[in-house]
Image (cartoon, rainbow, N blue to C red; front, side, top):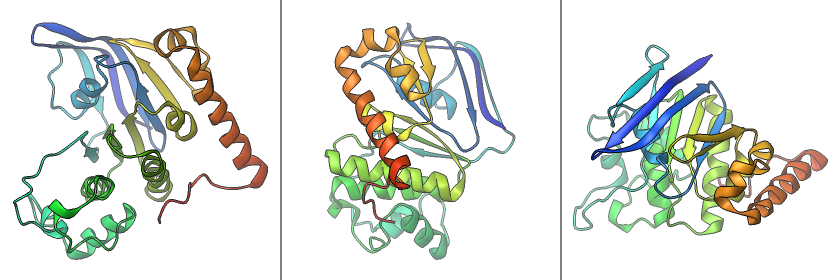
Length: 247
């Protein structure tokens, strides 16, 4: 079932066209990652889907009543503001304590509910934002470079948690990432964007596409090699790729 379908989507910001003629379909249960150079319109595409950016042309249709959870690239909270994780997750509307506990557990940080937001590490903060997005029990989870600022180990653990959430909830996931090795290992489908869709398909198809290599260089074959290694390793040993992520 299609959750989102965008046709001929174009967006202009401050008089400049950022996206042109983008077609996109998202179906239940798939992990789709958008990659592209800086300024290619990746965040704009995500924000247009949630209705935060108006279209200049085209249409976006969604499944009626579609529940969307959104994890922004960053969120600033005044470090002098005394607010616990539980209170933060209860804004702007209250949530049941059991729902907050379940969301934190799914995000892999069940012990943070009484911690001050200002005292969280970067990785913990992003997990709390993920928990907030999960409070709506989303059918579509959207993440805009949610691991920005995390080290490689933290990023791998975060994306492994995302895969676990997809398995548990059956939700579709649309994310922007600049970490090509993670994209190749964790995605069902990759969309290469540079103002328009340059190419899309399974990770292996996109990594070998001329359009992709023209944007990211031949060194991206290393990302493809890692994808092949992890893909083959999981099949050879019957393992899931959880990278040691907390459950």
